[in-house]
Length: 547
Image (cartoon, rainbow, N blue to C red; front, side, top):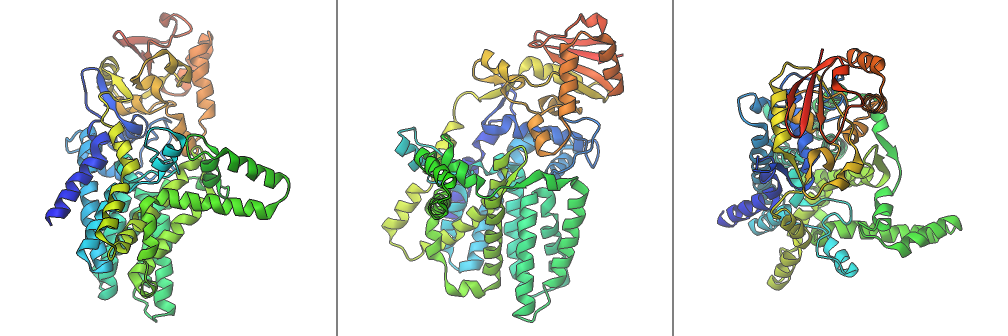
């Protein structure tokens, strides 16, 4: 237990530093490390809307309910926040610690069930926290600084808490598999009910997790019925599917348009992109083979690229293939896990997601986690020197990511002046806020660290004002499949054209109550010309209330 405790404490730190350092009000403002200036701020904004009602308003698309997003994690945060606990504390400190601790405990218990070996369980916990890709090899070959966590596209365990819906879904899956084992050994109503709810609600925490787990449960149910003549799992699957469908239909709208069929996009772009693996010779040959109709050569190159994708992402977890045993393919718990792993691969290789094509790599994260369990088992009978070598190599890429989070300053921050302005706006009666659309060109006029207003198109106005914004965080709106383009056009027109009649009608027709305008932007006409009054001003921001 001492080794498990030490591993867990180190794992919490390893996975949590970027979270722990974000969301604090420093002397320069609120700092954000890693990708949290977009993703973390989005969760803050969504929690704010969920605190006002369920289903929530889309934080960056005022007047429309949020669809095509799994928001049960954010709902959980909002319920606790409504007890008087800070959202930033919950998002950046409390839940990351909880998820990392549960990851370690759950992994240890699950592996003990699978392999009946405490040493293997401890090795599996190590992989669960510290595994990484072979991205460091890519950087070494290119003569670059050691790093490359996501060179093969997949983020590794060090980044787990940067994606809280994934983190909580993985924890739910781990403990659900443990409960599944108990249910299969001795079925009863209570265990079946809890198991059904756990598998069913996964889609509300992480849609990818819900889809692959329900599919794996279906496979195991068929196996139990047709091979074992055992129907005990059938009601669990039926009830889980019912919950899944109910939640899915309630949060989805025209969801079919969110993905597109584009086989091997991740594999090909991994080879093509210079910021990934980047093998120009492979790219040139692939196009030459396609253009010349040399399909056998093309197939061979794609197969090689596919092997690079798997081996590169797995890193030292590739030894897991030596941890497989024939009898595992006859045992229910292993069959469920193998099904889950196989199903998680399919969408990764054949689909892309609208807006962020690479987002489908998140299906693959579950494959990587369970691969670590079998990698630990493979090392069971290995020499001590080999085990030590594997343990030393395993975290190299992820350690580089961890090191980047220790830099003195974050890459992005919310200046104190904007923080003050938005806190003032949060005290005003509710209403739709209009802000200037994000201008990518402005970032070049600032130095690192960058204010949130120029760092990326994010939901920071909604997050800190607690109000929904007419149009904000366009990248997220693309993913959500909203009709954002007309709003961008209208907002641009308001801030660019000297047409008072149109501007007044625009404000009225869209029920806009506030205009939040950092002084890096200007109105096209004198503010006195508009049907609004200034209610706040400091050296950085003007806030107007529409009359």
